[in-house]
Length: 302
Ligand SMILES: Cc1cc2nc3c(=O)[nH]c(=O)nc-3n(C[C@H](O)[C@H](O)[C@H](O)COP(=O)(O)OP(=O)(O)OC[C@H]3O[C@@H](n4cnc5c(N)ncnc54)[C@H](O)[C@@H]3O)c2cc1C
Image 1: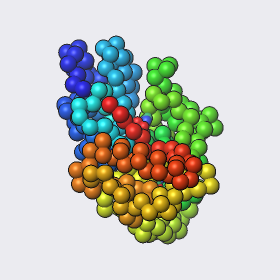
Image 2 (image 1 turned 30 degrees about the vertical axis):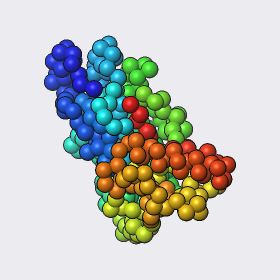
Image 3 (image 1 turned 90 degrees about the vertical axis):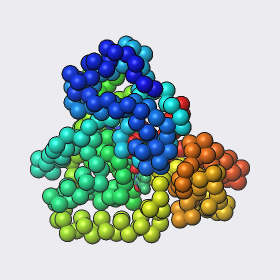
Image 4 (image 1 turned 60 degrees about the horizontal axis):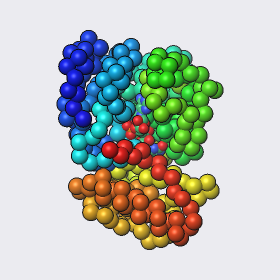
């Protein structure tokens, strides 16, 4: 979608919003799949209300993009514009055991920055790509931990109330790759309360997690991490593996040979290819195990 309305374009500089025409979502997502649309980069949290008001009153739909590491985006010209927070400097400020982190901050850098200041707890998140905002929305987690456990407060834009609000950690429900935020809430910043731990000890935990990832995941290939959530008490990857489906392909979309719940773009996969592969595998797992796998990857259909 291209923003044609002159009143929107003229207001962007005052709002501190940068317009990138015809951005390629294939270049902005870890799967390397997706069509084109206008991208709006927001430099000031305070302008979000004005920007969304302007888009809504002109009938321009939008989606929020973090680091693009959990997205499968449709092909072609997309029927919505994409909003993304620009990274402020600094994006992490420490105050005792509390880290004040902007939603645009890189998650991995946040984990290592806090670790270097003897703040632990998040070792498992090392190697999870994307932003802190995306991690909050998804309640990213690995190796028995999840980001939600450390959230003291979230600053977010509530579209329903048209204002910025602060939610306490206990007001938010963080479940397995699911949170109680409304679909149109935009995460802006978070206060994480982290346990004190010597850097050397945290580093050991980080090294162990890195090694586990390296030995089990197709890290050099384009993917969005796990495609499906694990059903209660089971492993989606194991079910797919047991059916002998590793390596199954539709075009260049392929079930990883290394980890059956990672689907990779082995070349020039289209969204159509990847969606067909995802639907096909889901169907075969259902037939064999009578389990309806739920998507972990967020699908942006046009
Ligand atoms: C190699 C690899 C390994 C991975 N391993 C893990 C893992 O171990 N555990 C895990 O949990 N995930 C994993 N993932 C998935 C992914 O990295 C996480 O889900 C990550 O937290 C997504 O963050 P993002 O910024 O990239 O979000 P995006 O992919 O950009 O967006 C994901 C969703 O969050 C929303 N969103 C993003 N930013 C905001 C915001 N500021 N406000 C409101 N909504 C927002 C988007 O609209 C979208 O719905 C992995 C991915 C890859 C590629």
